[in-house]
Image 1 (spheres, rainbow, N blue to C red):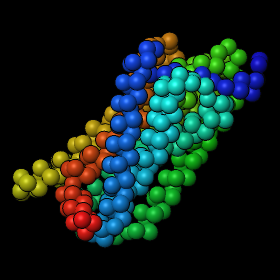
Image 2: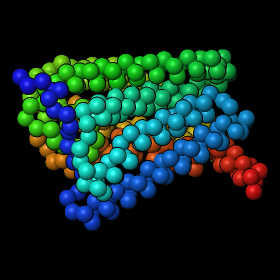
Image 3: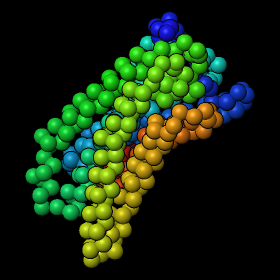
Image 4: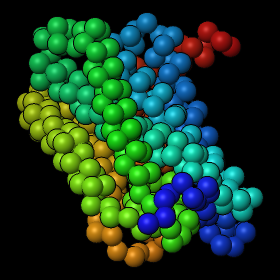
Length: 307
């Protein structure tokens, strides 16, 4: 069996074959990328400057925004440059780094969204215990624990992926390096890799999804008991978009990582990958800022202070 170190470079797919379509899609993704950066940067600045937003909810929201800026920066800029210049090559080291960063960002995205659902559950269902349960020290410990879990998962995925041999092709059927695409072009036995994906999907993603669903069931049952329609509407307007983003993120990622290794359309794989790598970082600022009166009020105060 030829060792994987013989291959010194992989070749990535571009968004389209024709230059005009590549240009159009690259500009679209660059706009989404810039929108994601600006939206998340605005949340980070506002939640840092305004002392009224120094609460557990906005602490986790700030962490999510920092993560989303990193997450969307791992894939989009490089993919757009490759597509525009038709330079499809990426070194083995660069591919390993991209897989590591994508996995750690995706893992932290799941964990942070789960923690934010827990925060909303405590705030709505157990408001009197909220200051005790969601202390700042506890929030920091949860964040550090999430980082450690994400780091371990990313290391496992990266090491297991590059223990495979690639002796038939170095063309990755994706616009960035991801585990399923590399497994597809490997000529090694990928059983252990599939087992790792299945275990992490069940333990991390599956348990997180169940936890989020249970949390929101309790939240909705409590919200329906609110006497004022305005309070119910406010709670639903915050929770429902969160559920949509979580469902979109987990379902698209689960389909890409857990489906049987069949030959499928590259375009379909790329669209599904966009749903869990680019869309959530773009939608999160929209959900948590444009629909949040406290953040909008904080932005207005900061703008008045500046101008």
